[in-house]
Length: 564
Image (cartoon, rainbow, N blue to C red; front, side, top):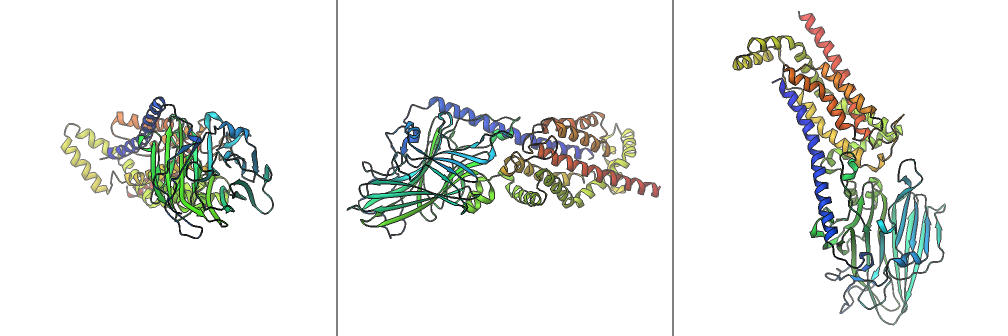
């Protein structure tokens, strides 16, 4: 029975290996499938030129004062004749806020560049993280507009807008409005982007003024186009396994429209109270339609390109009338607070996998401690101490059992020598001594099993929380979400593991004892490429466990000496 504790340790190691293996195989298979899709894709018109189109209605679907109506079933995409080269030729509006350096093209009012001023692309460099871009190798556009029946003129992403000026900067008011204007046939559309200080939420407002002689019917749309080459997952770079691609909230659940899956190559679904998004590690671009309106979400894939669109219901503006519409955009880091403030369901983009139920409160606690300390590494140390206190009763029971087992070591070894040729008698003798001395050889298993999910949840928090991205600690640790550059923490982890091995009862089998002696080195090798914040947690937890076990061993030894 003494060996069962070792089996639990092996089980914990196998669980960690299983998580890494399944992640790697899933990403490898997906990469292979995506590569095959890219090779087989036939030449097609550029998806970025696609404009959602609604059929000509036989009667107005929505008047200026009418309630929301559903979009016509299956709007047929049409391809604009205007190539993307026109984006480079069209004048660009520069927008500067405290968090953004943006560019909006006057062709369609397309968001063609979004630099996030608070996030360096590489730690220490001046280059900022860039989401939207016209770089042909990684083209990424957020296109918005109004569309309608074929043959009519609409302010789509191919239409030319005018702007009062080409440079806007956030002022003391903390609110910045960037209006663009389009005219055709007596209809004037004013499209206004609204920015707020410190926020990655962007308001999008439309004002449609019909001074023509006939009703004007339109539908609002927004779409995210991206050229997104697939990445290969690597054990040595855990973040390479993070999902990047189109995703939606369908009003009930979060769905990743993985481009590797053929079912999402021509996806279409009617959704109320949903949103579309293109998440990547730590960052996202999203479109949140108005609540309560039925939108059609569509996805198209061509090679490495995909287009995710949301098209709303038809609206009809009578002659002499005016209609106003609003949508919400989000372009920036997956900061949980800002996501849920924009829309409560956007919080699902900040996902921690199967262990979200543990990771969420763990991150909440880390955030609160960080708010006091101002250092994420110190916050990890304090939270580790708090978790150790939480598990103290279980750890105490486990430690006492381990100490008693260590004290019984010589007697157990003598019994094993006496009955080495009779397994049945050996088993009975071992059970008798355990019963007489009130020792449970598997009492140390429960705390380890209970702490394993917390450990894995910590892994997800450190790896996938943008708040910890490039977060420094002290000395040589400049990024808690990346591996230790000099492997000092893994070396300390191996040393603490060896000390724990020495403090605990040695396995009776010499071969098993040697294996357990090398286990700390094996674990340190596995953890060498994990986030240094996770290794810091493990080291602090191990040091606390060593101190606790040493104290318990002294107490048990003193009690045994007094009893003798």
